[in-house]
Every structure is written in structure tokens, then in C-alpha cells.
Length: 272
Length: 314
Image 1: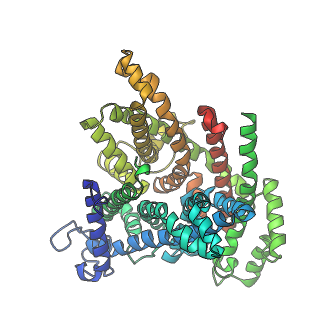
Image 2 (image 1 turned 90 degrees about the horizontal axis):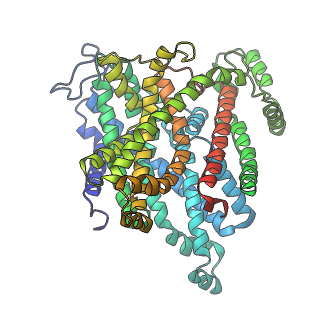
Image 3 (image 1 turned 45 degrees about the vertical axis):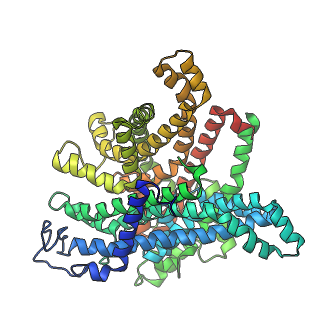
């Protein structure tokens, strides 16, 4: 833990992430107004004491919508990465441990997924799975799975030949037990590192998909869709874009700092 | 080198088979009936049946796949259900703005990243290095659409120097063509520049700490010569790798950038097809993008093998 927070940027990253999590969890308590309540008598109002980040084109309070949008962004970032890490680790573990044709087939499948530009694949999957948050979560989960599968497979191939695995086999442990109890725990560190680095990118990807119109649908708030809705009012009310834009940038920056710190603490060899 | 190229080309074949199968089955991932998803619920059942026949969805799945694959191999990617145009013609009409945008973005990225990356490494821990590192961090953490909107706000809305949407063909009207591509290309180029700056800085710092650089300095060579003739040559190899890895990001960025700036490119076509639920068009464009991506990655692999002979002998 001391090694994790040894740098100044790591502390900043952890603080930003902590604030984002608190805001997401306590959104109903922190939100000064109802994020969905329209007020057509007060549209495009500039920032003031009542509305610190102004109001949008239908008079909704932008700060409240940014606060509620934090939930969507964090859920998208963490859930899609967890989905990808679990699916990828299982595929990589199975492929690496089985070897031979199973390994070849699984890895070619992962290569095929990697052959699509990530955003284009997520867009196509999101389109067929449905333009809602679940569709986006599954789409991003699929996009990030191959990275984890390849990482896990590489680890398994290294660990498979170690003496303690030979010993477990000699003691009569089954393949499943060896993979679950001996290989997986020893291969987990790079997966944790990769997961911590991927969350920020998953949040950016969700925001990009929301910006294009997939993901959480209006009137519910997500940072990407708020920015898209505000781009038509850049001249009259740029704050519609700047509020969620700043929240997105600061959160991603903080998660990047934290991800780098996790990598440096757990796997110093990968330090850039 | 011949064996290396052949090996890389052969390795692509199973991936191509899986990619085409994946794109074919995309339409079948739709929850419920894909025809219902493509057409309004109220559409005439006979119209729905006709579309189902046209797309071959009334056939068994293996027949559908073989028919579709046969078409793909003949260059027939089907027809858009919106305008009944062959997909390949739709893409053909849209490809030029996308290629122009990508090339201009790469030029901007290299022009920004090289001096910044080299200066950051050469003057480590100075204000210049701080500026370079901060720029890289901002570029990596800021999504394309936000960069685009900030540029539109500054250069389009506030200063009114450049157009904020639309496309003029640079071959027909070079000045206005370049003006229409400037903001989109900067948007796409800055994100790429950020990654290249970071990679170049760290690879140069690593090269500068090597023994051969110490020897070069001990020989009395100037710092400029040490940097340009010794460190930079080796520092460029990771940059080539990163450029290859960033191709996916470049395509994704192009989709967003074309959408924001209303450029009539392939990226915009994908977004339009997705929201019109024009699945044959989505399938066709996604397949073509994936093939172009695989082809470019193969090219990068081969160039990388040429740049670094160790790769060829692995």
C-alpha cells in the first residue's frame, strides 16, 4: 500500500477516484436539483449560485446531471472491465492450460476480435444488442476481452512448467484444481494491472458511444450524451459542454494516475 | 525476409475466415427478429417478408452464410436497405474524405510529436519537458469529441477563422478544401501526437542511458550528433510499433471526428448505418474497415520486420 501511494500523482489519482466514487454513490444526496426536471422558463442560463454549472436547452440543472452522469460513467468503466477481465482470464486460462488445438482456436478467435478497430466493433455490437447501457457494457466487455485472454494465456504458459505445478500434479490434483488453485492466483497480477489501466479507457469509450447516441438514452444523463446535446449551443451556452467535459477529463486523468500507480507498485518492470 | 513475409500473410488466413464469419453473424445477434429491428413495427408484413427474402433470412443459416461469403468473394457486399445502392459503391464514394483526413492527421501528429518528444527527452526535467509531458497526458485523457468541440469553440465560434462543419474537395478547391479539413485533422492528429510524444520521449530517454551513447559522448561528439545519429535511430523503433497499435484508435477517432464535423467519410457512413438500422450496410462497412485494418497492420508488421531484423528471426 505504501508503495502504491509513494508518488504525488498516485495520491492525486486515488483522491480523484475516491471523490468520483463518493459522488456516484451519494448522487441523490449531493444533487442540488432533480436532473430530469425541465424548466422552460430558465433555459441556457449561465452559471449562477442556484445553478453553479448553468442550465441546458430545456432548463435542467447541469451540475445535477453531471453528478448523476458520474454513476453511468463509473458503472460503464468498472463493469465492462470486470466482464472483460473475467471472460478473458477464463479463456486465457483454459487455452493456455489445455494447449494444442484448443489454444490455437481460442487465440485465433481473440485475434479476430482484435482485427476490428475497437470503437467500430463496439458501435456495431452496440447497434445490434440495443442502444442502451447493457448493450454498451457487453460491447465494451467483448472489445477488451482479447487483451486479458492473451495476457492470462502468456502467464499460464510460463507458470505451467514450474516445479510447484509438477508437484501438485504428482500429488494427484486434477487439471481443474491445478488451474484454479495454483495457476490462477500466480497469474493474477498482470490482470489486475491491466484492469486498472483499462478502466479509464472504458470510461472514454462509453462516453464516445453515448456521444454518438448509444448507451443511456435521454432524458437520463450521461456525460457523453450531455456533451452531444450541448454541441448545438456552443455559441450561446458553452457551459453545457464544459461541465460534463471537465468531469470526464478529470475522472479519466485521475484513473490514469491511479492505474499507473497500480502498475508501478505491482509490476515495476512495466514502468514507462 | 521472404519466409517472414509468407509466414505473416499465411497467419492472417484463419483470422480472415473468423472475421468474415463474425461480421456475418453480427446481424443474428439482434435480440428478436432482425427484420423487426430494421423496419417499423407497423410495416406491411408483405414488405417485411420481401426484405427477409432479399436478405436471404428465410434460408437455413448455413445457406445464408455460404451465399453471403460467395458474394463477399466476388466483391458483392450486398445492398443498403435505405437507398438500395450496392454497399461497395456507397463506401467508394465516401473513402476519399476519410483517407485525406487520416493522412493529414498523421502529418500533424508527426510534426507536433517529433520536436516535442525529442526536446522533452533531451531537456529532461525542464520546463520544456514539463510542457511535453503535460501535452501528452491531456491528449491521452481527452476524448476526440471534446478536443473537437474545444477547437470548434475557439477557432470556429470565437475567432471565426475556420469552418466548423462540411467538406470541400481539396482537389477541386485546394484552399477551402484544406480549410474544411484543418480542424478535423488537428482533432484526430492531437490525440495521436500525444501517444507518439510519450513513446518517443521514453524510448529516447532509454537510448540516451545506453553504453553506446556514453561512448559517443566520450569520443567528443556534440550532443546534437549523439542525439540525431545514435539515440534517435534506436528510439524510433518503439514509435513504429506504437504507430501500428494506434491505427485502431485512429479509425475510431475518425468515426467521431467525421460525425462532429459532418464530413461525408466512411466513419460517418458507419454511424448513419447503425442508427438507420441498415444492417447490410453496417455489415459491409464494418467488414471493409476490418479488412483495411488487417491489411495496414500486416504492412506495419512487415515494415517493423524490416526496421528491426531481430523480429524476422523470432
